Length: 77
Image 1 (cartoon, helix red, strand yellow):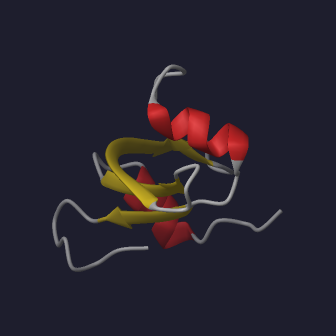
Image 2 (cartoon, helix red, strand yellow):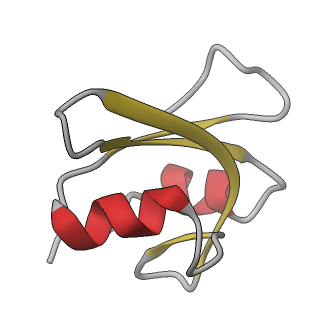
């Protein structure tokens, strides 16, 4: 497991917006804006078990995540 950098943990502890990209069954991208948090070791993405992104992740666990700073949206991980 990769240790999260301190500046990422600080960003995750703010009310930051997260964008998560998953793959549809046909390979096309599916992008969702959601809230994000941390327990200090993991990135925790807010979702509901019945949402499409969960179905996509169960089928194909590869995802892309971008988290932007609420103070400066051009600053992101």
